[in-house]
Length: 610
Image (tube, rainbow, N blue to C red; front, side, top):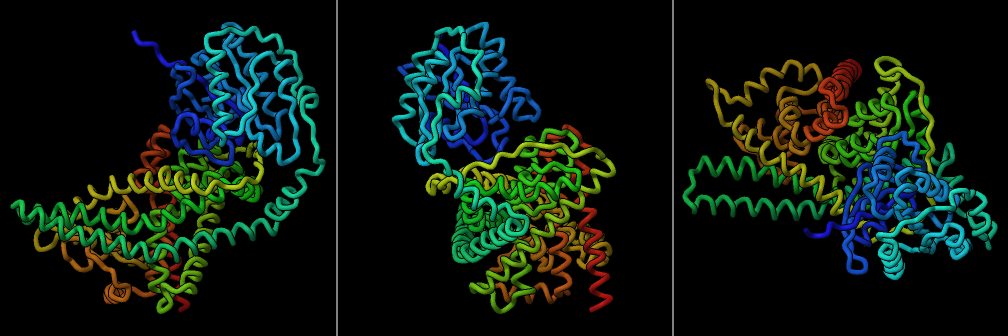
C-alpha cells in the first residue's frame, strides 16, 4: 500500500497570516480576509518537505478552543479529532502573548498529551515586528517550550523553507510537553523587548479619524462613493468592447450552426435563447466586477473593513442584532450567497438567522448594472459617459446602497422584536494593523476567487434561463404567447406598484440571475421572441418611454430592484445554511413584501403630489 500523506494542521488567531502561509506552501489561492471567521471551513492543500508529502489543513482563525461560533468549532473539532500528525501553531510577532494563550490550550488537549503529537510554533509577521521595533528572543522561547520555534515572514521563501525543515524533523516523533505550567503573559514579557515606545502612535492617530463617530461614517460614505465612481467610469469602455465581441461571435455561431444544417428553430433556440442571455450577462457583469472586486479586496487587505464594522456595531446593537452582521452585509454587496455563507461567523443562532434573512436587502453585484442603467437613462440624461455623469451616478448609487443599509437595520429591529426576540450578544472584533496591500495578489485573488466565481455561477444559470425564456416567448396559447399571458395576468399588480406586468414578469423570470431582467423586458416589449441587442442608450430610452415609462416608473423599478426576492443561488444557500424551507421562504418573502409596499407607496405619493 502507498504511504498516505502526513497531515499537518495550521492553527492560530485571526489575522496572523495563516492563509498566506498556506497559499505559499501549497500554491493554492485560498481567500483570506482581515476579520475573524472569513475562512469558515477547512481548506486543504499539499506540499513536500524532506521527500515526504504533507496535506496541509488551514483551520479557521480562533482565539480560543472554547468554541462559540461555527468557525471556532471547525478548528476545535479537527484539533481534538487526532487526525493531525503535526500541528503548526501560528503566532503574530507583534502580539505574541495572545498566540501563546491559544498554544497553551492546544498543548493541553487530551489527544496531544496522550499521543505526544508534535507541535511547532511559527511566529509570523516578523518583518512587521522589526519595523515596529519589537525584538523577540526566539532561542529563549524555544528553550522554555522545548519544541521548535520558527521565526517567519510568510512572503519570504527562506522562512517557509525553515518551516518545512522543522515539520519534517518532528514528523513521527513524540513530545511530553513538560512546559504546560508556563504563563503566556510572563513568557511574553521575558522574551519580547520593545525598542520603540510609541510604535503604535501613528496607527492610533489614524484610527481616531477612521473610527470616529462623525469622521468614521463620513469616510465610509466617501469610500463607497469612490469605489462606485471608479467602477462605473472605468467599466464603460471595456463593457462596450466586450459587448461588440460577444455579439459579433453570436452571428458567427448562428451561421456555423446553419452551415451544419441544423433546423432554423433549433438555431434560434440555442443561439438567440441560450447564448444571447449568456453573452448579455457576461458583457454586463464582467467589466464592473473586474473593477469593483479588486477595489473591495484592496480595502480588505489594507485593514479597513473591520473598522467599518466597528463603526456600524452600535447601530446593529440598537437593533438587538450582532455587530458582525455588518461584515456579512458587506460581503452581500459582492454576492448575497457569499454574504449568507459568511453569517457562520455570528455566534448566536438567533442573530445568525436575522443576518441571513436580511442579507438580500443589500443589492448584490448582479443588481448594480440594472440600477446603473435606470439612473443614467432617466435621471442623468445628456451627461452619461462623462466624468461628471459617472460621479453623479456613483452618488445616486451610494444613496441606493445606504437605503439598503437602512432597510437592513430596520428589518433587523423588527425581527428582533417579533419573531426572533432576544438580547444582543457581545463579541470581540480585532482591529488588525494597517498593512501595505500586495497589489499583484489583490488582483489575482479578486479576479480568480471572486469575479470569475460569481460570473461562472451566473453564467451557469443564465443559459438555461435563456432557453426557458425563449420557449415562453415562442410557445403560443391561442393568439398570445405564454409570456404575454403571464404579463397580462400580472399587469394589475404591476400598475398598482408603478410598474407593469412585463416588469414583474421579468423579475420572476430573472430569478436565476438578476442580470437578465432588462433583456427580458426588452424582449417582451418588442415581441421578438428572443432577447434583443440594445447598444444605443437613446434607442433604449425611446423604447421604454413608448411603452409608458416615466421617471416614476424608473423610480419604482429601482426600489423593486433593491428590494425583491433573492436569486436562486442565494435561496439554495439559505436552504443549506438554515436547513429549513420555512426560513428560506421567509428570506424570500421579507424583501419582496418590503419592495411591493414601498413601490405602492412611492407610486401613490408621487402621483398625488407631482
